[in-house]
Length: 194
Image (cartoon, rainbow, N blue to C red; front, side, top):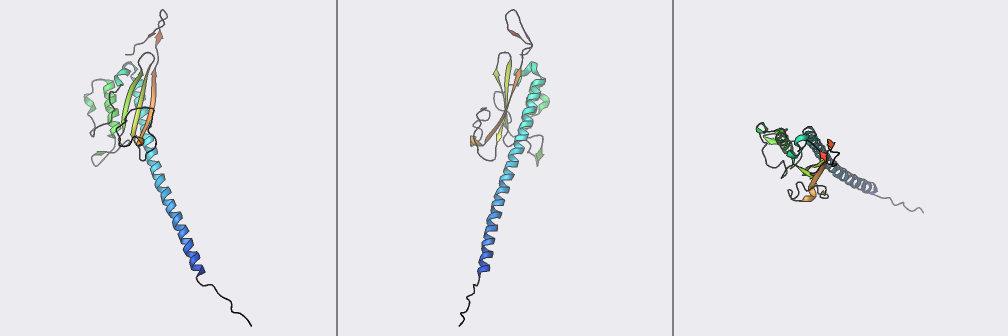
């Protein structure tokens, strides 16, 4: 006597459902990865803009070494909403600072009457870190990043300007102005700089 062979029913349907679930989880992971890539792209763009602004001010100070101390800022530049009129600037340093302030505000690019260039809430500071010869200046550009990381310790520029200091990003550069000649009689530096 032969026994009837039991057949399995619905096994293929279960395999298809498990495959669909695996594919859905894979697509969700891919969507998460895409959002992280977009965030990294924005951060990289902002960093590139900050590098350009930093190099711009370093070049301006190097071009006007005689008046380098005139570039020191008491408070961060880039605050406010409206770009300043730089045509009334009295000297080269004041004009450079006015134009840098406008660049920090993103005034070079507009959309619908709003400044959209540069970075989000960009600030710029210039400090005289060594007053004696050779003089040394620290130039800082800070901005609000998209996601919190670690607050930068290299500069205090913009500190407290953002709701969470861990979103503050910073780039700094140091400009050193050397001694033009030494007075051999007493070993002091003679300079035509201020």
